[in-house]
Length: 121
Image 1 (tube, rainbow, N blue to C red):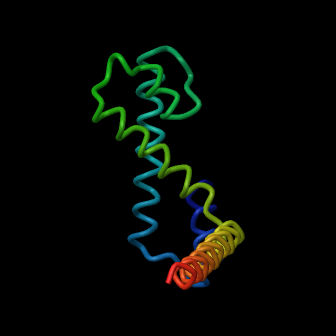
Image 2 (image 1 turned 45 degrees about the vertical axis):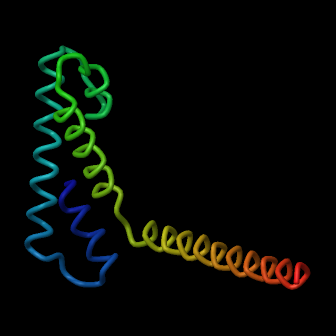
């Protein structure tokens, strides 16, 4: 079900079929996330909601490298799980708006500096 949803989201987002390699990566990620979550939950006897929660709970038992990778898997899974055309379009609009604001700020700063230079001379 999750993979079918991800496949449909990607198809809507890109307007083309999902490449086999992308489907393979999604499948590997979903399987690995579920396996890691089962492993740490079974070990601790706690039904964690996600790998980040598990990482925090087991921080004294796991190395920093392993904890960091668990968090990375959790983040990657969350991104793939929530990928949608509408979400990507909203985020693109947000990025464009902030970039435009940065350009306007830089232009205004340049104009103000230019005026200050002319007053000093």
